Structures are given as C-alpha cells and as structure tokens.
Length: 148
Image 1 (tube, rainbow, N blue to C red):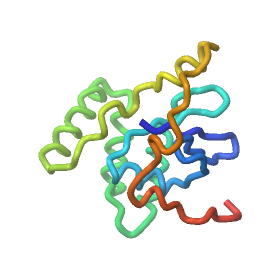
Image 2: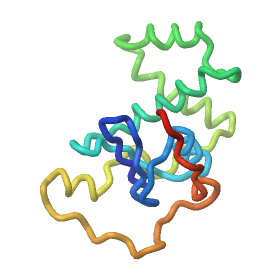
Image 3: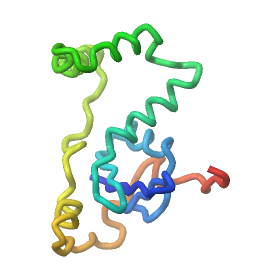
Image 4: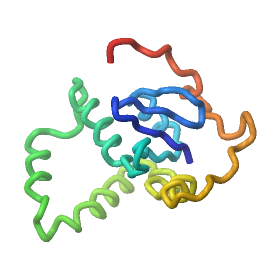
C-alpha cells in the first residue's frame, strides 16, 4: 500500500516515489488497482476519503459527469436519515453487478507506519531502494505544473 502525505498547501507527496503528485496521479493509482492511504503530513489523520471525493468532484466538472444533479440531491437528503447506513452496501452491490472491480484489499485501513508514528515510537525500516516503486503509467509522472 502506498502512503501519500497531504501538506497544508494542499500538495500531495507520494513517499513511494519521493515526489509530489496530482489528483490525476491519484486517479491513475486507482485505475492501476494500487492501494494507497492519504494522511495529513502533520497530524497523521487519515484524509483518504476527502482526497477520493476531490478526485470525483474534479471529474464531475467535465463533460462526462456520472452523477446527475437529481441523484446528488437524493444522496444529500439521505445524510442523517436512518436509511443512510443501507446505502453504501446497496451501491457496492450495484457496482459488483456491473462488474466494476473492488478497491484493492487494505485500502482505507491505517498503515502500520502511521500508527507507530502517531504513538511516538520509531517507524519500521524503509524498504530497500527500488522496492515498492510505483509501476505502470503512474511511474512516469509528468513534469510538475507551476501556479497551482
């Protein structure tokens, strides 16, 4: 599983490749089936859900939006409703029926390194050079853009 740190300036830093990445790079990780967790660089708080929502929001602004305004309004109405807990399992079952692959195992679970860092104990040793580097199209990151 990859560890991505989010800094106060909203930049994302992938520790596996020692480089800053974009939301599009996070999307590519998802498409490649890579497990990852996004943590606040200062506090260690898990920010994976927030970053995933940002990826969705970015793609919803384009011409190929998946979620229609009426559907989004219906979802908003469910927050605080007793039926809210029933929605995630139903959506997952629908995606299973459509053949959408599940998230990599372990996604969203705290990384051991972050848990030990929060407890103030030493981190486990770093992997050997070259071990765990990102592969596929994600391994070839585009040059960093200025002005973001």
